[in-house]
Length: 173
Image 1 (cartoon, rainbow, N blue to C red):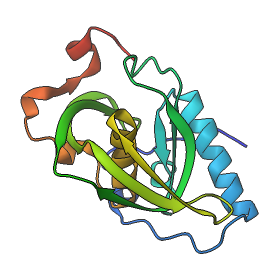
Image 2: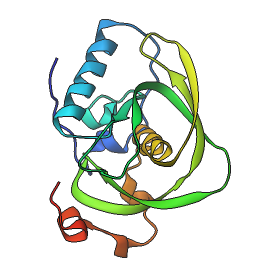
Image 3: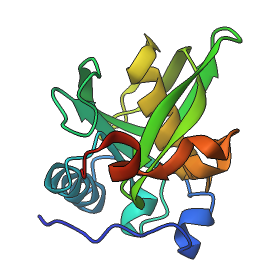
Image 4: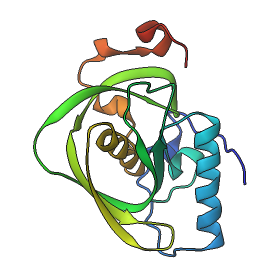
C-alpha cells in the first residue's frame, strides 16, 4: 500500500459530507484502510479520516500508544470505524489542544464532550460500540467531524488560543 498526500484546509473534499460505506470487506475498502494507516503512521498522526486523503467515504481510523504530538495523551486502541455515530452521554465539555494533519503547523483549544458512546462498523461489517472518555473521546469526535465537512478551527470559541505549534508550545512537530 502507500502513503497518500493529505488534503489541506480549503480543499473542497474536506468541506463535503462523506458518503456511507455500503459494502464491507472489499479489496477497495481494505486498500483504503491500509493506505490510511500507512499515511497516519508516516505523519505521526493520532487519527485520519478518508476525506483527508481525498476519498469522500465515512471511514476513520485512529489509535495512539505514544505520540510526540500528544505526549500527555493516554493510549487509544487502534480502531477502524466505518459509518460512525457519536452520542454524548452528558453535557460536560472540556477545551483541549488539537492539531490536524489537514491544518499543518497549527493548534487550537477546542471544546469537546468528555464522555461519549460511539458505534459503527469494522472493515468486515461487524457492528461495535464503545463508551469512552478523555482523549479517546476527543479523537473520535475530531475524526468524525471530518466526515461531516468540519475541521477543528470551525469549533474554536476563542481565537486567542489558536496559532502555530512552535509559537504556542516551543516545539515544531
